[in-house]
Length: 191
Length: 91
Image 1: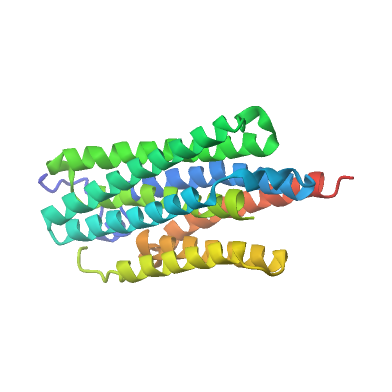
Image 2 (image 1 turned 180 degrees about the vertical axis):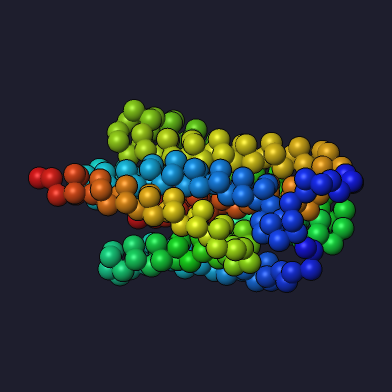
């Protein structure tokens, strides 16, 4: 613990959200624009684009629904890891993070199976505008899942780093990735 | 810190799964397509809200954090609305 210095801010100025939390939300704000731009252009193209979206009927809804369930559940497990970290329950943190990493890896595995089925049917990114959007949006999202898996795995592997605050920050990002999928799933698969 | 109330995370997860099932059901059940699309996206919006408010703890956060979420959402909406006439009203 650092000794209090003469330069420390008055107590009244130190209240409010931590710098870490503001930084993560600031990052998420930029991510909202990244995915927001993609989603907006998809919706606009689709509303104006006749019936090209019939292509979406070739997507496998079952696998995607399984993936939705996996991601929703992994959001629960990481928030449980955070709650465990807050009450100092080390095994609980480890279990929550491990399940979350497992969920992320399972999601990517299912996504890889989906891609291979689609490509084997000739639905490659250049097969039409729907497929260009599909691979761009799900691919960018999958990269975000991969990033989250790495962050969560690092926390899992480094016991001393598993502070409640760090688990909370990793969770914020992971939930955001979940929220993006909550919109990608109906946009691409259900409508 | 450390003493604030936690939402019932498992109950929130239960709602998320139920809403996912409702969206899936709307997409396969017979009925008007417009109704199905409305149900699908309404359930998606509620799911996103449940995650943001409870898992991301937005309902415990101060206005500064809320502003950091709402401003880019507003910009994304403006972007969509600005693009819309270009495509939707062509032809």
